[in-house]
Length: 427
Image (cartoon, helix red, strand yellow):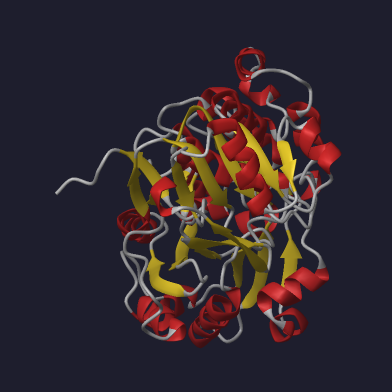
């Protein structure tokens, strides 16, 4: 059979003997966008979950801040933002509206990326502010997180009369699911708040996994921060592998998010037996912009590979590594156990930037070898403890030389779009 894997703005294909394929792990009920995306969004806004409609919330609110995801997320903002802006102004034509780009601890979004994300009209007409997690003058203290860390967020959001957010919901490798409360923490939080929330102890929690919200310490902090910030309304969507909207959820930041997570879990959960080889992509652009983001797809493959097996990871990485801290930590030559012991000795507030990603990356490397298909230099890939390959077919030949030509293979076309559980689905 021949299977296609997203790679940047294109794709790479692998032809593999049927007998080797153990499973193709894709959303079990990945729906097509049967209805118009705009119609799904408008219906969600017409019937919000646990909340008044957005236009009603906007009445008599002088300042409104709309949090939007940054360049690393495939959020269909050109559909979501116009719908939300129109309803806000229907409720209050005089409202001062700002769009706050939730960069978390990522680099600033460029002007060209803003135009690509939002469209030229919104970029020319609206007040757009890019969050800076290190801008001390524009951060406000909201109190103490359940975990004990300081909760500091963007001043513009904290002082808004109405705070709302647009985003999307997908499995998240340590927060359970993206969307909802993540717009605030880490989206518009201070670096010190993010690193505390992403500390080694929390990342090491058995509940800090894709698809898990109950008892997840990272999620609990995030939810508290969103409530404390006064996040009053969200519009979150679920997209299929073609990045088309398949469902939309609007309303109360917690209740609407939970409804979206329930839908996402039903459509994204796949069951597998571990295989010798796992082939996985990061879902293509924008999620495979750098090696840092590619750790998400690797963590999905980690759940589907045998100990000592091989992961073939595809990520185009047009933006390179994705962080100097990540590269320095991951190329230091520490094994997972040694690195984890070192990280766990640090106080939560001493968590280094990107340490959480390194912790998960090293955990993956402890379990399996990783062959990395990307545009990054071979030297960089080898420095991170992975094997480089120029394309998927070459990577597959290398994997078979390591595991044998009769090796079992699990195929995951979109590693950030599924939740892998071991076993078979309950009937």
